[in-house]
Image (cartoon, rainbow, N blue to C red; front, side):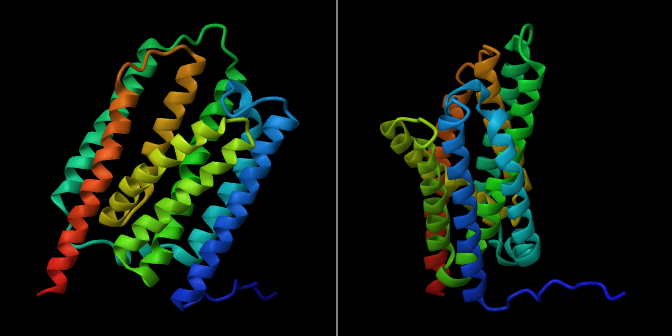
Length: 262
């Protein structure tokens, strides 16, 4: 019996870019359906604690899609295309963001009230936020970023992949989030996406970002449900992302221009 072999990986940058765009479109469409079902079928909303019980069932195929496309067409791309040598700003930014994530976890586990909370819903929150962290980082930093690195250069690829990350969040309107809140979210997500993209490019890996993304979403969502006191950690984390991304982007731009004039 002959084993079936998947089609060969496309070699041209144009083909890989088209695959990335198709993956984003499918991912976007599934999330749009998820938000619609959450709001109009399940009777919940984007800001409700129980929305993860519905979102989970959409995140499973979304994650499968992201993992398949990444493994088949983009695995190893960031390692091959990453910045060398690594900037010292990366060490500073990664250390600060990592420390803030640990701070959020500490605040959560030392102040959360689990008594009387649904264990089933807590498990849905845990599983869903984990899948969100994994799938979003794969789509935007593992697929979109390297796809545009091959065709548009580092600076443009960082900005374009971050723009896709921002636009993706417009679907939250279908989940009941007010338009003005979505616009604010899209702005912060765009700048935060720059931070994530630069770190991914500098590291040549996305798994640290998956962990950070998961911790961020899990502590915020579950913290609200369990009345945890996260203190200033979320605000500090947001401020770090808003500062780190643009700073590192400027550093990359300066280094790029220096190398061009050598």
